[in-house]
Image (tube, rainbow, N blue to C red; front, top):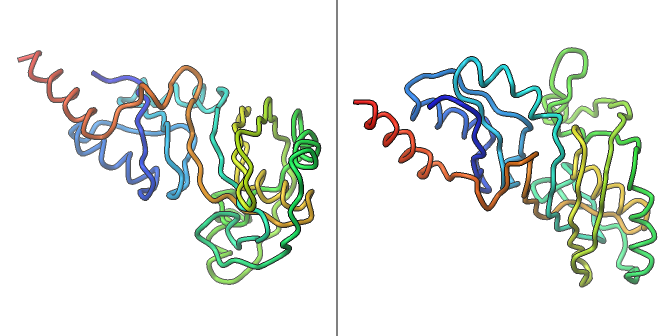
Length: 222
């Protein structure tokens, strides 16, 4: 039953925690994932099981992704999400037309600086390891593609968006940069990845679902 699966990662565990759980269920098979989700994010995590499947994860990483993002305006965060220490910036309340105008600047091929609390390598070490020691690693701008951004709801201080992206986009960085553009500051309050390529959140398997599927598959071979 080796192959590539869409697994639903709940809020809390790391992407690696999910991989290790699947490895235990799959009896030590080689397991990998395509496109990390932060612990505070939930949604589709594409997982490959078996040597051949894990070799194909590089293709999955490059596929289009879709997100539902909840952004809090008025403050910044050390980690660009709910986890970090917050700093008040402004209580100015931009209207919806100003927000929609600001968001247009982030659609298309853009430059994006990843969050310092990320796994981007700096001098051979993940940036977050420097950040946790109180150091501020210098991260360079990267090319990023954001195909669509749609405003779903806005009630100060929360802004809810749907975003469709190419590979390598940090939604935490998008939230931070929207806040900069508006002059209010912002951070990512919640995130759900609803799609990776053809894998959707609605059809993704929970760990319990996967355990049952794996068990039934093995029993049918006996």
